[in-house]
Structure formats: C-alpha cells, structure tokens
Image 1: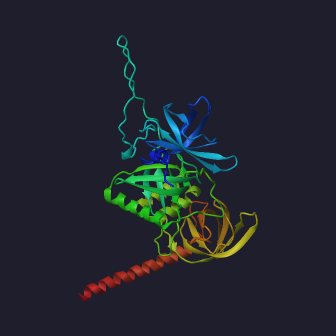
Image 2 (image 1 turned 45 degrees about the vertical axis):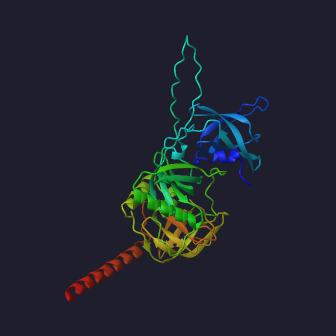
Image 3 (image 1 turned 120 degrees about the horizontal axis):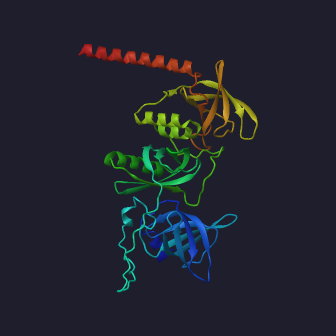
Length: 402
C-alpha cells in the first residue's frame, strides 16, 4: 500500500533521532487535549512522538518546546498503536510551516527550506517594529572521539543512562550513517561509551565504511543521538549481553572491550586507557594465554557455584574467561584461583547465548592491578624476548650473507 501524502511529507527531509521535551495541545475546541511528552524523531517537516492517548488524523495541534517556549502549529498525520498496558501511541506530526523549528545547530543540508514569513500587521499611524528573532533552544551536542567497528565513545555534557538503547546518526562527507547501540559506560561531564548492537553484517559494514570516510576526508562529523524509537532505558540484562556478531578470524576490538568494561572501572582509569588506545598503546598488555583456573561465586538465582574454566587472555587489570556455565551478571563479584593464589574480580561483561561469545565473560580486578597472572605474563615476556633475539640474529646472518 502506498504511503499517504502526509506520511510522505513528513519524510521529505533527513530525520534525526532526538528527544526534545514538548507540549502538544489540541487546537480543535471539540477535542480538548494537552500532554507533555518527548519527540523520538524530528526533521524539517515534522516529528514523531509517543503519547498515552490516540488522536484523530488531521487534528490541528500546537507544539511548544518546553525549554525555549517556542511554538508552532501542526497536524496529526499518522497514528500507530504501540500496545502495552496502558496502551501508548506513536504520532506522526506534520508542521504547518516547515523549517528548523527544533533549533538544531548543525541541521542537515536538506533542512534549508525557503520559508515565506507571515505578513506583519501594521498601522500607518503606529508602525509595529519587526519581530526580534528568538535564540534557538539549547540542544545536546556530541563529539565523536573514538570509533571502531564495534563501539564508539562520544564526549557530551548531557548523557544517557547505562543500558539505554540508542540510535546514532553520524554525518560525514555528505553521507549519513545510522548505527544502533546501547550505552555501556556513562561518565558525567565527560562522555559515554556505546556498543553497536545490531547483529546484521551490514551494520558492521556501515561502521567500517564510516571509519573510512572519517579517515579519508578528515572532517569533523555531525553527531546526533536519540533513544531508539519505541524503546526507553533498560537495565543491562544478566542472561543476555547483546553484542555485534563476531567471527573467529576478525581482529580483536580493543575499544569494544574497553567500552564493555567501562561501567565497572573508575572514570579516571577508563579515560587513561582510552587515551592509551588513541596512541596505539595499551595501559596493560593483553597476553593471549590459556590457563586452567577455578572460579566461584553466586549465580543470578542466588545459588553458589564453583567451576573449572580457562582463560582466553589476561592482563594486569583482568581477564577473558571461556567455558563458564554459571549464569552471572555484570557487576557480580567472583573469586578466581590460579595455582595456589586467589583474588576477587568483578564481572565486566557476559557473552550472549547463541553467539560466538556464549560461555565467555570478562572480569576486571577490584583493586588497581592484579598479580594473579604474573607468572604467565612473565613467561610470555621471556618468550617474546627469545623470539626477538632469534629475529635479530636472523637479520644479522642475512646481512652477512649479502
């Protein structure tokens, strides 16, 4: 079925996933209605918002931005039931006067719409002064500082809570990239770490293409972040850690690993590690080593467990474990024993079932660093030194033969 003209009109310009508190009020005396809510998507021609009441199509309404008191008239173009108890409704609204009513500082280029101003009533005896333009309402501004195929970090003053599902719009080189994600780390007055969560391969491809555009054109991207349409904040679930589908042959994603651990780390430590990654270094080296260890604690059902599992890699700050059968959740405390030493760790992430991460968890040390893996780290360092010596000797011998 073809979209109606009004539905098409709302989509004539780029939609941005933004939450803007507004008041919607009916202008029809026969249908009294007023409610404060938030937009889910906005563009130059209208917006989408969720209300607790169904409104009739073509109802004339007034929209007022709560922060700036700016007002505009609009009409209800679409009404969709979202179900639930109590039932909620998604409204599509079309502005009577298209334009940047929302006051977006870096609006998409297709928002530049020629507007015909309404005539100003005046009297020859007492002319009215021209209206003074009102400042645009303050909006959230995000700055992309770090991005990989699996995650990103955005600097911002106003943040979303950990566990909030979001939709990210990043425009660079005249191209918009939409990425789905969930906030894994939220640092007041600093920024937030977001894990990309779509399991579709084209989602990872879009992220990689965006990275290519950013590194090729060297321009500052325009970033907008909003809650994913139809979804509000949600707690990080213990049984399911939503993650980008990965393959065994894909490279290790340091930023994604850091973002997953971010909510369990002191902010200063996270920022230091983030800066180290930007310099192509790590605060603590990650050693790929398989060790048989014992782990015990309390599962999500309140039952004690003890298992023998293995490490996938270790560092002085934590480890990635494989073969974990117990159901644990993020922030749980577990005890790990390696040889004759043991130490407490905090669960930083839990792999989702039916994914390559099933049966895996990431743990981070509760203290500043751990010495639990020192023998393995020292052994790996000696092996690397020996390998480096062999490579150096080989280069020298090759030089002498020449």
